[in-house]
Length: 441
Image 1: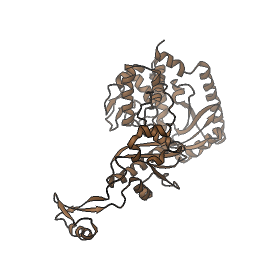
Image 2: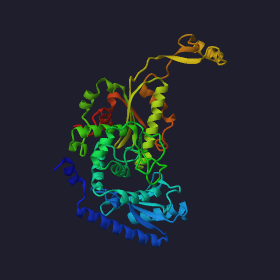
Image 3: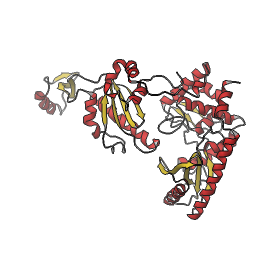
Image 4: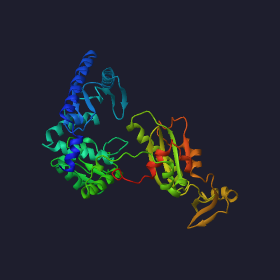
């Protein structure tokens, strides 16, 4: 039996497992219809996602869409859609681009999503309104045998850390995996194609041509050719898939599908791996924000970018950054040096500009040197207010353009170097210094 056949046996649901999920779907539909009737909500139900398309792995999520007539107001759709979801699931409202309810039902995680029943794909659609068209397209166009090829591709994507278009991963959605198998024929053919990809690769299905997009990878949506299905894929995720594809084709292994767990390193191992770099690490840490990843991770990236920009404005050189979330959120920044000299060369206006007089008046007595001209511009040797990167972050962090929910955090912890070798921060340090890709032991 081939490696891929062995993997498929492990990830493809059994008939009994499929019967269980479909029984849950039928029960869920009955409850939703009953609740919709009670609320005088006129909705059609549609099972979407991987279960509907038979491309799901074991222990799938269930995605159920409640399609309201186009004439429904946004306010009514939201109010009645969320009311139905909470009554059926007892779950929690979630918001990314669109409100929905997530909860547990019959042993499965379920998303109940209200949307408009759009009949014409040329009409403006939200991300969720488009989803039923995606489901119908895949069911109509995925060839016999290709569902299992999609399952293999999804499992490999999960194993290497590339699966999911959500903000945390910035990777390949299930729909994109299905389209890739349609386009190239099967699991191995997708990897063979991916192994040759370059930045700004453009892919489309025959007869579904579309425009160029600025993202690292483009796959034209056959349902809406003005849209790039791969818009969420970051350059880092794309490069990771390219590398994994090359290495898998050269030496196939189950490690690509089922990588080993990686617990945090002990402090001694972190110190050994980091060496002198440990002294130049600073982390901004705060309690994990209790919102969905699609809301939190863009804010964490924005906050990290603001901290990096502050450091760079003060002439600190950034070597590497990372984000780690466990019980805390950690924004980790590695500097070329934690400390800079007390003296710095401060740039002034052009020698003959109207601002020169003001500059000279200010800096003649304040500078550590008299003002001087270099390459037609005034300069002065000035004293830095703060010479350490961690001290700069402690002083200025609250004034930065942080994510809106990050701004609400009551207290930030700014630690650096060996201070971070405690239980609360060791996971973040491990992730930062562990340079191995997921499939490496």
